[in-house]
Length: 202
Image 1 (tube, rainbow, N blue to C red):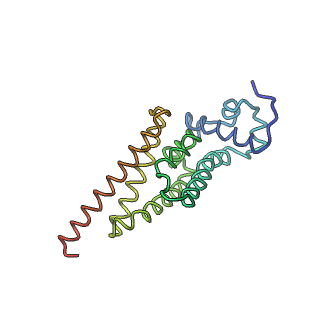
Image 2 (cartoon, rainbow, N blue to C red):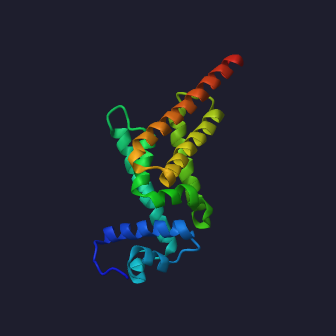
Image 3 (cartoon, one colour):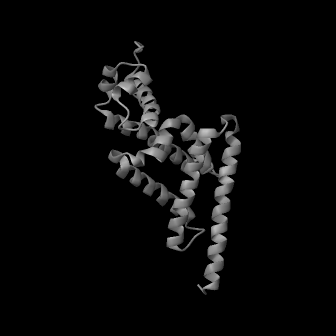
């Protein structure tokens, strides 16, 4: 039954977007109607359309839930005192606040034609951020670009898998494991790259 509780527009928008994330995750973009979203949110179809002009606008709003939180969380990380919060912890925090939307952004949206280009741009930005962090460890540009994409995938895929299977009460352990694994990969790549450069006389 649709709710009759009146909420402030911003709160209602967030509620519907969160419900839409769950609906889109189950049915995909083409397989999910605005009626499905309304049922998931416990509101009428009219309320959904008062806030979102159409399904594409709504899907993008779901993705923006994650993107806005990522932007704010990484900005806080930059501004925080040393040592900065592990990137694994930042990502998991965002994912816990928006679990369905996080999965949708990283796993599914790239396969939806209206959003494929958008997701490519998002992943490009993620990889560029990772590449900048890896610059002190990996000097060769081709290796660094490959490593950036690999470590970004390791982090985001790892968070998604933990959302699927992990116990929230053990999130601290997961963060430690994911961070340690990422560091170990980068340290190994750096050591191999340094040995190879030495062998080549560079």
